[in-house]
Image (cartoon, rainbow, N blue to C red):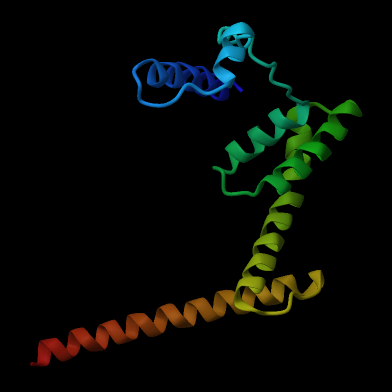
Length: 162
């Protein structure tokens, strides 16, 4: 609202100046604005809105920091919710973290595979088949890398024989 009010005040001043110097006819609304001017511009130094945080926010931020930001927000907040539940049951924060970390390693890999399969246009498989899909993907990537290395080696040999 502050920028809009500044534009309004600048507009009134501009129109008054143009009409005073003959650049335009004086609009009928100028007399009303002079009689009933707009309210003063609000101060800019008012208190800022408070930042609302929840315990899950801190726990999710810690989880993302531990993972170097390589995890999506949904996984981080699910982890934080479960960790907070364990903390509320009386388990220390670090122990709760260590209890859940192995589970969420699998959750992260499953979400990665889900996104990967959508990207490749493959129908997503049942969670029981995740390990097979991951193995097939690793094998396919390994074959592609080996083939690229073989082609590179053949090119080097061909250049040496020239």
